[in-house]
Image (cartoon, rainbow, N blue to C red; front, side, top):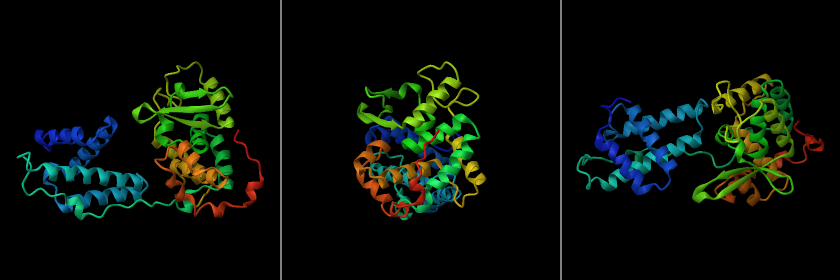
Length: 306
């Protein structure tokens, strides 16, 4: 970004907002990143953004969502970030004299992008399709196959899978394997790993030789964590090879896992704990999709992922 685009006062205003309104350092980084991206899009200081600027930016993000480059949930989140920041500026413009007196939160005039609150049926992969995917993915890179199957069987997010480290795996007294995550206030969250995947992970670790417990699980040829973009490409290529009508994403694998868990009798509370949802009401997103999965012929097959 050109140093001339944004003034020092505007940079400081971002810091004031972060300190006064945001508690977590990660959240502060996320907000700052999106504010600076918006400024770069404008090619001028964000304090002088008009309604057309704000609308054009949100439309550009929606266009990326339509092309599958980002999710509509991400677009909605960015809108909320910018709306909140601009609301803050309005509230302090009498305090900081460098803020133009005419400043207005033009995001108020831009319709908020609405991410769907129910999961459409084309986001839920059927077991017959899953069987095809498994066959195709097994023919490719062993690492990519395990990473995608770990997402499906455990409900990990794509980011959680790519930054996963060996030291996050724990085993209880009964031999159950789980992945430990530290969340807010140093609380712990545990994601259970299926026996099949635990066995595959053990074989994978053995195949790559000695590794440090502090190293990432899925590394590229340069010794860096594999990217989410790469795993999306692998899954896209597999879907095309299978000639599916719908191209599934790693997020769809997670949705499918949730839908199948609920369909097979999991409580909303247990699903919340496994998938890291903020509340049990998110289980309602899958209610309409569950009946279409009932009493399917494939349910009579005992499929194990090996």
